[in-house]
Length: 162
Length: 192
Image 1 (cartoon, helix red, strand yellow):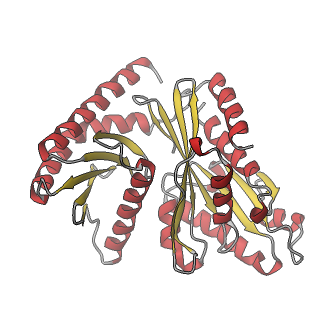
Image 2: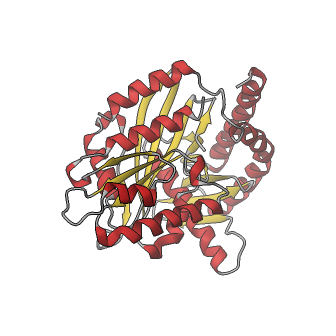
Image 3: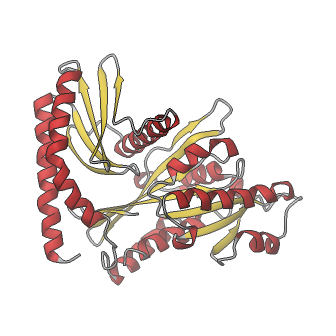
């Protein structure tokens, strides 16, 4: 990737991380995760050490995808938010810029109303940065890695999948 | 499309096992789970029915480790093969980078394989993708059974593009890693 693109990616990515950390702080959430629609974590804030992140990201994306299809079945365009309430912990999931999924895990220390308001604010802030990040992410990856990378990766694959 | 995160130096690739119901997709992924070094894989997650049929998907994250500063992760999914679970199948294909088609070699499943391949094409088209453009490998599974279609017939019906294929007996761990290696490598080569 050309250096200016890489720098721009870094700047926007840091600004997204900062916004997520602010959201996490302001809502007293346990953690906030930004996930792409295919179920891969983009970045997170707060304490995620106790979460199985790949499974959480995959299920959040699947949850959202299934609910969107349900919306379609009843003639709705999309359900843009999902809320799962537990005894101790709850999850609020929302779709941002029609591109990524923002999941907030919180306890009774905060309220759904506050999470909802702060997520909306964060979504507005993230919109522009996400557009720029996705310009990079969605561009063709030719040149993203070189021959040395491929050779080394193939050797690793041979040994991992023996 | 593989997600490259330049900031956290991560590459995430999504590989989907596709094919007719009861063909052995889940058996493939379970074998991979049992054989890959536990330091390099996460939990195997299965969303299945009470009868152990895949309802939504199976999911296994596998970490290749760090290559030239990039941490490389493969996310393996299976789709439910039963015809009536097409909505789930379509959702799992979102963002797919590579495919392994697990065909059932038994004579009575011949048409099901063809239907499933057609269904794969139809579902990819909905995402404006074409199976021709994606890394694909085929495993002809259940080669140990007596009532099987010849390899030539299967190849003629399912592999006009001439992609990598192998014979498999998934329940005995035969022919499982070859297609996975092939597709994983092709997915990474596409990033070059």
